Image 1 (cartoon, rainbow, N blue to C red):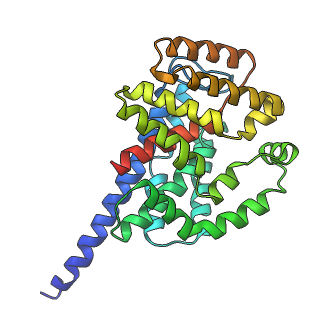
Image 2 (image 1 turned 180 degrees about the horizontal axis):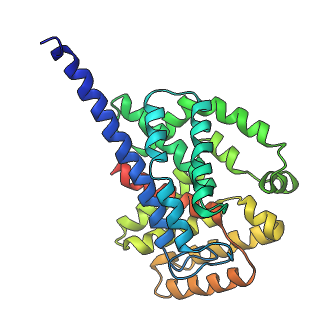
Length: 290
């Protein structure tokens, strides 16, 4: 009889645990959604390795398997109201597991950062009994860790990484600034593009292609800027805008146009990895907010 008063608490704990698993597994599935999309200019898919010589789809699958427990852990930390330092520690541990699984190849560092924060924000929201709507997830991220992310972005501005150097040299918005502002590209452009494409009756593959090009059109991808300079980044953005202006993924010739861009990007060693991360985040947001 003495255990009976604890049953509501136990039920609540089980519910939070189940929610964390659902949120985390949705992140892993979303990364698989991104990997499976083809054609995908310059990026790794099950068809080929894109602009990369050190990785292929099997490398990504090993990475995904290594991350299967990380994203539920982020959601649990968010539900517990953990400080940003705890999220950062989990991210570093997830990154270490990824590198062990891939033999030192960075497949998902950006995705760990982006999807980890989103899972934490959704876990925080779910623990408060609130619906998982895009605007709610974004506000949860702001309220939970907005100040810490802004401070992190300020510190990162002086870092010596290739992305930080490219951002300073060209005056670009890096991933840290995007996160500090609660991912405006994701919530205002990429996820709406995915939802609009699905609402128009496009299939899942074409809707994801539309979302990918929407991301390429607006993101200041510092990896692209590092590889190809500001002119290369702006060229990628313009070609993505041209693709969208010509009907996007709904156009009859969309797949062939995307294949042609893929061949061109591979020849120039261009890889819009930031856009790939935004596509995966949009797929995750679609799954958890339905």
